[in-house]
Length: 195
Image (cartoon, rainbow, N blue to C red; front, side, top):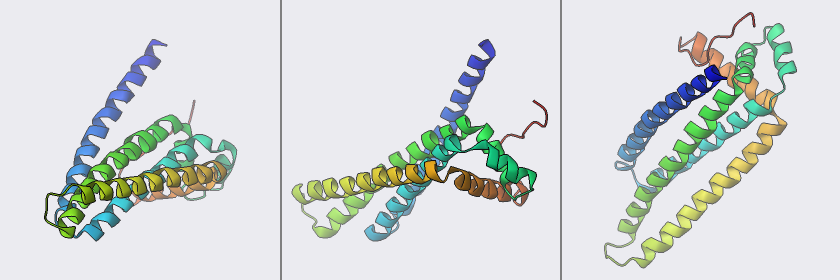
């Protein structure tokens, strides 16, 4: 029990540090990109960030909803990415925490701050006066639209994650296989042959 608590605290601290670093990188990257592009490209960038959040939310849920037996069967048949998919399943709690909490939450925060920059750009374009009404209306409309797309997209993603979890995790396994084998970047912890 003591060792489990220590591991849990260690993992939580690691996730917190990773979140801090990734949030700083994504936030500064999106801000610098948005300062050099038009409002339309900025809005497309915001929607892309929202899409990233939806996809990673779907991956996190699929990892916890996946069925182990077909993944093992595919791994036994040497299907590309199946071994990695089994590894995702075995580390579902950590994988889901990273996908949902780290990437998903960072996407939500970064899309919100990026949207603020886009709203300010559009307001300046409409007119240069200090009149607050168009800014408030624009802010409410765009924020509500992005919120609706995020929530609606995640709801749809959850449906696919639960009903096609094995295929989604296998696809994630194939991507991880490519990253680990071709790019030589370790993504998942190594699986132990013996328990």
